[in-house]
Image 1 (cartoon, each protein chain N blue to C red):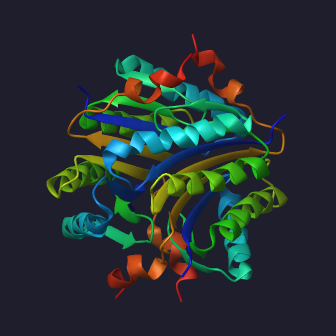
Image 2 (cartoon, each protein chain N blue to C red; image 1 turned 90 degrees about the vertical axis):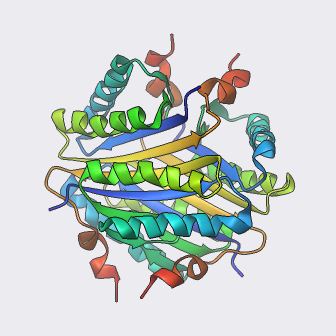
Length: 96
Length: 96
Length: 96
Length: 96
């Protein structure tokens, strides 16, 4: 079982009309990594090993820069468990 | 259109085996308020007016106490816009 | 003893060169409220009753709007305890 | 100049009476790394290169486990800038 859930919210400091585009690029990148993920209204949550997920968080900063942001503020939440932790166990009962 | 999206993650300091129960009580309460909401793996996001959503955040702390937590740590994210902001505009394209 | 510590980080979506000015206005406002507070590099933490602190969080959003931001993203952390919680008990031993 | 500020709040799921001890171990570890840091009431902020700071965040999870937590929730904030970003520029004017 995966050892971590990591949520990422990026706030690249770009003009507001470009904000969604940069966020979409980050989500596209996450999709391409092959990790399990769920897009939420304020953050995207990923499931996997802590190492790989923090590597994705790091890379996401650079994708924002590549798309025009000189500065990026991010909020990252980590749920790390030696017994394993899954996205499904947290939300499956709330999805109709 | 609603002026705010507010995400709430509560971490009541209770024994781990009771954690899910307390979180469920908070989500049950949010459901009962009638605001639009989405449950995610790390936070629940609500849509509405800033006043009413912060009132719900406050009440959520007390629900944790009522369910056995002497102390509660919460992470709240606010997205506030004078032009209005919706959950749908952020996630609809990512939901299959 | 105060029942809560609340940390606030505001990210008004304005041009980067105006960002510090808007954040300063929010800190100035917090100073004027009379609550105990500590300014940190990523957030300002306040000590008081949950009600008054969430009222300040709400007002801070409007101060950002008044200073030119049509949209504001904030990260708020709450530490709420029925036994009381203070800023000093957390940081006094780390301040030389 | 350093390219990043990273704030870390760890919430190891241990009995409340052990919470401060585990948090202290994490701060002790950060101190030992040699990076510039400031301890705040809700998070510790570090200054350095993004790579090294995320490495510290990762290691901090394992220190919590080593000190008795089977599960750790963390909140991490990243301020990343290609022009460099410092703790001093953000708080020096607020320190008397």
